[in-house]
Structures are given as C-alpha cells and as structure tokens.
Image (cartoon, rainbow, N blue to C red; front, side, top):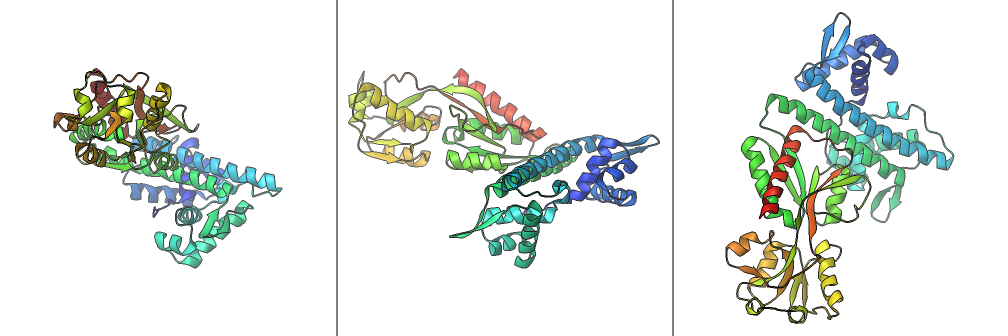
Length: 407
C-alpha cells in the first residue's frame, strides 16, 4: 500500500476547532498554539481546494464541505482510537503501560511504516513500497513499538510477522485511511458530480447480469466514475472488505454471517439447476433422476462454497453415491468450455448462465431441486458509510435485483 498518510496533528486540530467553534479553545485542547492551528487549517484548505470554516464574530463554523470532511475525519480518528485501545489492552495483559496520550503521539509516518510492513512482511520491501530508506522506515516502526510498550514485530521464517496487537492496529489504521480517502472523494464529488469511486468484490453469480447492469447504469449517470471489480475466493474478498480494500462484496450470502463486523443485505433468492450442454442426452429424458445425473461427469465449485454444499447434500439426501469424475472450478468460461464439449453437468444458477442459454449453448435438465434457493445480495462493513457514488450504485443494484426477481 503506497498511500499518502495525512498529517494527523493537523487533523486533530481541525476536529478540535470544529467541535469547539473556537481556535483558542482548540489550542488549549490539543496543545498547539493558535497561530499554528490557523496556519494548519489554511494549509488544509489550500490543499483540499475548499473553505472548511466560515469565520463569524461569535466563532468559526464549518461550511457545508467542512461538515462533510469533518464527518470523515471524526470517523478516521475514531478508528485510530479503537486501534490504540487494542494496544492498551495488550499492554495491560503484559503488565506494561503505554503513555495515556498514546493516540495523540501517533504520527502519520509511523502508521505508514506499520501498514507497509504489514503488507510486505519485510523491512526492505516495505521501504521500497513507500519510497523511503530502510533505516528511516525501521526507525519509525521501532519508535511506534517503543511508544506502544508492547512487541509489534517478530521474526518469521520468511521475513517479519506482526503480533496480534500490531495486526489489530493495522486493521484500524487502514480503515482510518479509507475514511480519509472517502472524505477527499466526497469533496471532489462536490466539484464534479459525475465522478466517484466504487471497489467491488465480485463472486461468480453477480458477474453475469447483476453487476454489469448496475455498473452500466452508474456510468451512464456518472461518466467519470471509477469502478473497480475484484474477483477471488470468498475468504480473500471478505478479508479485503474488512481491511477497507473493498467497499462491498456482491454474490451469494453466507449463513450464518461469517463474522460480526460485517452485515449482509439480500437482493433476491436464487434457485440452482442441473445444467448441461444443449442437446445433452438427459435433457431429452422426461424425468431424469439422481441416479442418472450421478452417472455423469461433473464440473463443480470448490469446497466451502454454498453451491458445493448443495451439490454434496443432493446426493447424500437421495442415498446415491456422488459422481466420481469431478472438475472443480468456479470460472464460468471454463465451465462453459467443459460442458459444451462433453456430457458433463454442473449445478449452477440459471441467472449465471443466462447468456449461454440465449446463445443455445447450455440448457437446464428437467429435474426439480427443492431447498436450493440461496439469498443473493451484498456484504458491507458494519460501520461503513457510503459516498454518494457508492450509495447510488447500491440503489441501482437493488433495481437490477428487482428485475431478476421478477423474471
């Protein structure tokens, strides 16, 4: 992660002024002189290209863009408070005591070093990633460790490992920087209403109709918006969501919710079907049964996915030995190629292969599969607040979900 870390001292001063509506009161609260606070705010306004405060005889008040930015800064600093709280708890378990004002002592340089080490797991690679010398990065990391009064790093077989308190601090530091980035995006959006950024973790079913429909609709409204779609296993996408690398996940929901810091929102229920190539021998049979499909080769998702669980359950409930010739993949292009060139079958959503059915390549078997409805929707961090572009994308995705539900 080569992300610029803001000046935390300036942001704390900004928040203090926003809360007290007074530079003199803020000065007493953050122990920074009034001229230094005035200068810091002026630098922030110049860098952001907006006026953050309106000066009145009775005090200083946030402007409309100032209120937008203040909300993000408040959320950012709250994440840092949570990360510091994890450090303090770890120190208490060790019988050590970091400074009471540890949060106030953290610097952007230290957080930048910690995040870079967490991503690279190597001091040299981390220094190269953020563009500073290794001694400078090492010094910042060790200064942070000294302040925390708990070990943050330990040697591993392949570089540097982070201790559990360090991992917790990294998580909150990353989420803090996400809030800062979103604050910058929202200020930019006020100047250019056709912009914005959405980063989506996409699971297989969503890639065929739901996401293309919502993304195209968003880009028609906001031609300058940036949409990034990340594919991968569910576990990797969930990790990216929790770390702040992704804004939301879209696809089959999990039951139960895998962890308590994410929430799931359903869009529609999706049944599964047994599918083969058009003209597959079993598509011609009026009532194929479980024994018929067990005799075929299959293309199935890997273990741990909802569809794979339904596949295993299908044969177990019927008391029929499962198929032996299996290819495991979730890639629709590979599934299509394997099915169209053989008599293999797959268990899949019809929405996921709607194009293949329209093109006359694949067809469902006339086999009823009860209890295979799965909720399809999106997953968010519990404390996530979308930007205008992200909120609009979710609204458009709901519209696409209603179209799917109606078909």
